[in-house]
Length: 221
Image (cartoon, rainbow, N blue to C red; front, side, top):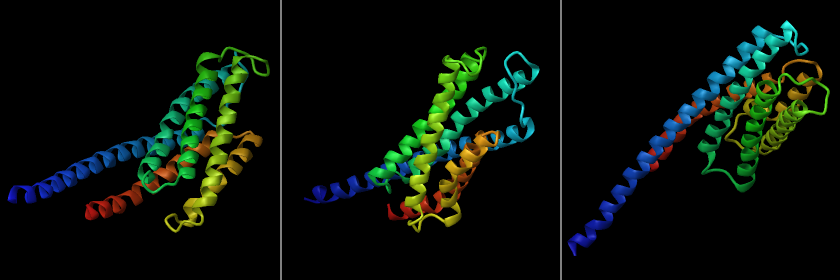
């Protein structure tokens, strides 16, 4: 009888140990994703500031700089998606169905921006602008994906603004992502700046907030 009484205690202790190990692994993964998202966002902002407006038509020296810049940005946008993944992982036990769908749509569309940029400047860079070709399709992929990201974040921002977990200054950029994207696009500025700034913001918030969140869950365990 004593053995039977002790068995549940051992099982409970093992479960706590496994849960603690799982949380530590998850924390490491979130930190790695956050660092990748933060650094890529910072590098993107610096690159945008240094390169500036270098647009040119294919075949010109200005275009060579523009092409190299966009090729680098394709990689950086891909890495910036780590910020969305980290945010999702942190909140996955707190989210409802709608939030999961919106964040998943944001992540997939973010990848679409990277794919569209990479396709345009790595695969179809020699094709002319303004023609019905694969370059135009790649640019459309980027544009539609960027719109989906902006709309998803706007809806999330409207939901988060009623949530006391998020500071108002943090929610504001969810709401401003799409308007800022539109302003930059029509003013001829790099809309890569919007995703870079958002990546920096969301990773900073996650890094700051995740430590007490993790400690709280460890104490409960």
